[in-house]
Image (cartoon, rainbow, N blue to C red; front, side):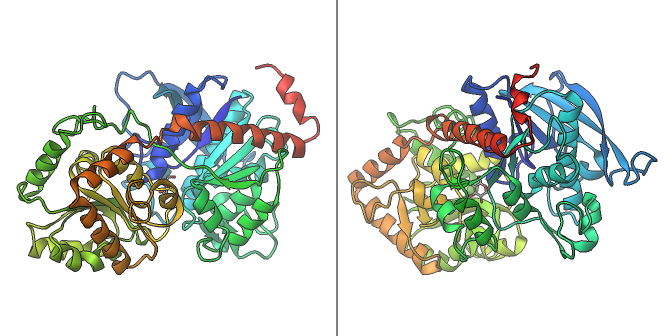
Length: 513
Ligand code: GLC
């Protein structure tokens, strides 16, 4: 089996959130199983920020990509763009950087008015590369709306292609973020080379929702936790796509399983390990936790807090996005500070969400700190050095911070939603068996209530030690479950594609490799 993945992020090359970590970890994990014919190919835009080490051997392929990416020619009246695909074997997969400066040589990864055009180019360049190489590929794995362009453009322009066409190349769409759809309004359809009435946009349509189209076109669709998969089928959490997802879930694959489902993400225990983390002041582990206190003192000194104050230090890290519930923490802050807690907040994104913390930090620099940027080293020190880690997300397809916090011995306080509900056991409801604290209602009061329960447990040293140890012992390793679940899903997707595919498509498997 040969697997190709297309995504807008891949750690450590380009990352805005958890998506980047998953694309990297999954490609590496699948490669390690030994079940594939060679490494996974990962197509990623060659953003300005992507820096390859100078000594890495890079293979270059020039690919002409038809579509509105360059001047029209007689053969390509829509235009044609010249793309360089730079490939490097690294981290256990083959990273394939789609280099097209007009689209990707910019400051930010997202947020440009022509994002649909940019990610349309990514998808089409991936398809053209696979065609140019004429190497049989079995499975195309696309992530979120950005890479859903690959499926839409495949069905529009390459449906009968012997390499990438329908039925030849099975597909999985993984939804990490259901809130962003990639809506392309009618007048902008041309930036994808589409028009109403073609084979992928209905006649009279006012535009295309790329995520919805991806859900409809993928052989299998998953999201990143079982609880969020169930929630996504409801109008409350479905972001307008619940009906589309219910339709997909009602369809069955050849094994009789729903074609929409959840697979819980993991974390890479080698990447996230307090015993080897070079950014920490001292190493510690489940068996020897003594140095966690050194990491706490180091964090507090760095941010100007009194390391001698034993009151609870609460950490929160995330994209400054309404999803993450920074406003709930801002609302709970007065109560928490009054209870003797201190806050360490780190995030980048919408500056308006940071404003309350900026104001608090100005008034109480000894009790509130805001680090308004994406800072890898500081994030690790926060995971290690805090006493509690907060994730009051309104919704959370999976979440990674709570799994890292568990591994770093910092019990998480989370809203019972999505992957948070699947990964944290509430110590209040299950005394002596919990790994963190869970609250039901995404309100400032709900968060403050759960923090108070945590402070009570922390006052009992033995109960706290048990909680921390159980959390550190939780196995969220990609290799322990998620990788095998994706491998199984890949095989099921191939079966779906073959059953629904072009006549004679099964002969593909007998062809030259
Ligand atoms: C998105 C989701 C988050 C998930 C991550 C990786 O960032 O919001 O819940 O953990 O993708 O799948």
